[in-house]
Amino acid sequence: MTEIELWSKASEAEAPRLTEIRRHLHQHPELGFEEFETSKLVIRELESLEMDVHTGYAKGTGVVAILRGTAPGADAKDARAVALRADMDGLPILEESGLPYASKVSGKMHACGHDGHTTTLLGAAKVLSKNRARLKGTVVFCFQPAEENGGGGRYMVEEGALENPKCSAAFALHGIPSLPLGHVGVKSGPSHAASDGFRILIRGRGGHGAAPHMTIDPIVLGARVVEALQSVVSREVNPLESAVVTIGAIHAGVARNVIPDTLEMLGTIRSLKDDVRRKVQAAVKRTAEGICLAGGATADVEIRDGYPVMVNDPAAAKFVLDVARESLGGEKVREIAAPTMGGEDFGYFLQKVPGAMFRLGVATRENYPSLHNPGFDFSDAAIPVGVALFCRIAERYLRDGLLS
Ligand code: NI
Image: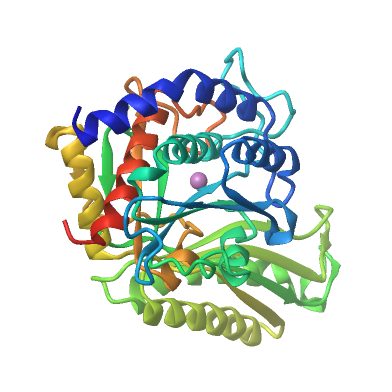
């Protein structure tokens, strides 16, 4: 049996149990930092595998499990350690998939497939623990909370998930409905955008809707600000670079004949490079403040740095592509050309160590529901594919590093 057959058979053998776990998680989604039952399930499964399990990361629900290989050289001073990461949180979305194992929690669902990511990493832990004699180093399994909102990954990294043992690379996967089931894509270099949040509070002076000259109308100024912000990307960012400014919410006023005192606006800034990020942040602030000043109002502009750009190390991306092509055949594996302006907090891991996230196709038909859609479901058949890839990535990296 070849090495590829070994990992794929071992992964397929776990598939029935992993499908049960995945559907259980799907029925019981929990939001960021509240993954208490998910975390308990993960701990229970890991504790049966004879590895060191550390709990309580990232405000409580994060879990790190350490599997020490027993291949010759695994305990040498220069033996490597590699991190494999999954996220565990669901989203505040009412599921409309109609599936027999749909969410039992009204208003919460695994619409980003993190149930599949958690299950796949548990599968890799099971298969690798049974094959520890093949591992020339240590595998660190990181189960993190709050990827969607809250940056659980940042806490994991700050609390030392990659430090003891010291990992020299990290890998993760994300299920994706734009690729057919079991296909793999990797973007080399910047893969996901930095995502920053902002809040603009315009303070005018309220009054009677029939006497606007006695007021400073924050609604008219707010409309100007929204309109002017559309020119930040088109006029201030180099046309060969990428950025997004989106206003997602506006709150002001209660009655048709009353001009309110204030208007609040919430938005997001996306970018792929630090200089673009700082330039857009400054332009949003300057534009809002300047327009409000011209109108006699003031604008309080708060911009909060969110997730960093997620950059797949080019050597690590090539390594994953090579491993995936050997396992699945070239026709199922592609290098993705364009990054997404979506955010991903695995970027915190990749600020610390080189590594890559690969995308694993889950689409079983045309027009498969997109991520964050109330009809989305992580296909169970993708799980053993992801498990076998995680296993081969770990085995190969511990043996040869990123060389391939
Ligand atoms: Ni996600």
